[in-house]
Image (cartoon, rainbow, N blue to C red; front, side, top):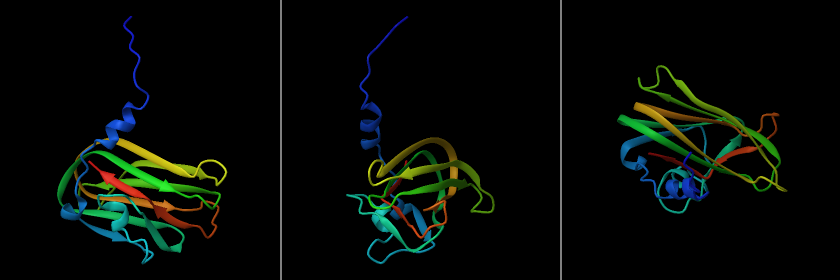
Length: 157
């Protein structure tokens, strides 16, 4: 048996050094709503993320519509909720035919708590050869409350 001790921060460093796609040049964006103070560009463009926030409560959808099919190998999502205890669910899907049909990548729930977990970072390693649409749907409160969906950062590589 061969054994090595690895750095526990290896994955974090790898994702920090990732070369993310410039979605500003590669895609149009559709969003169900946005707070004027927190537009979707704040979550998608390079630089320090200040995040997107919906203008209304309830389910929200963000779609990246690529002008040419893009191979994707990684999707990073960062969420933050420092104030409200809630269970959020998100679904990440992709299409290779311009949105006529979709395939689910992941469906996941997360419990936010001001006294505990206030942030969620998910890195999904994928092998998608020709993505024309990447769709993120967020249900900010699965109990049906009035929580507002938000997204600190969405990056694709």
